[in-house]
Length: 386
Image (tube, rainbow, N blue to C red; front, top):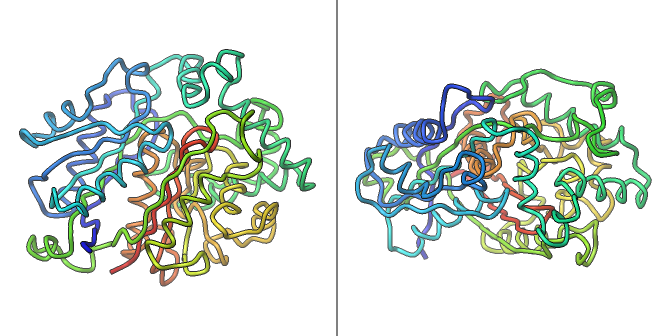
């Protein structure tokens, strides 16, 4: 079977880019990735994006970005899987290479979120929920996560301070990431003093609205060698998994189980031939601190109800047994929704190359997990140093 390796990676800083549009961000990240790989052409382009239509009134992103990047008459499409659009786009790029239909593929994730009114952005993000069962009744995305967080604390006896530790860890790592939106460490007290958005979710429990783009170049080892890409730049996409769960929380089998993440992880582990204990770091989808806890449990890192315990014990730190959010995660680096899964991939590539600003010692295998909705559409990718 063919193998797929990432040979180029690029990203823009995450933030409020008032002077740059969606196409500017996407093309900047894409050209950086191509330059990193030392190439000037690709066979196709996959764009991860969630809500460019309502946010900036722009669809047909594949054609837009390929055209502005000067890529010629290649096939180019947008991939949408809510907040997991970036992770899904990476997987589609890998599948294109593994299928033998294409040899060199570009994947870019992009979102321009700050051009809309905050109230509108909140509504557009809720498009990831169930329009008839949740959005129609006024349930925002933050409110849905607040329900899950409240139930988790009540069920397992955790406090808001316990979950705040996920944000503290993310900011400690993000402080060393030059591409992060927030580069300042915080304390538990900082989280607890921040205002409630939807009780018990506070401002510092949630990821920010922001802009950004990230990109990777995917090919085969044979083609990478032909292109003259140094082997130390190769990172293998060793395993992939994707699954869905009920789109609304009311029909969820278990409110505190990310079943889609569990199934996706099992598929990725099997494809890569690894177990959770083999993973050196985890880039999980901490759009809200509660999702970090639930993700660790679904990925098999912690037992049911013990995800927050790992944070309490310090095991999620860079020098812990299960490092997460090594460059700040969604909380500190930022969460430009459709781009997030590609940012995670770029950060994993840097870790596995030994080029990360906050390096996990001797990292050989990393995992990225990208969540769409409140756990309704989830991708898991396992990457390995070549």
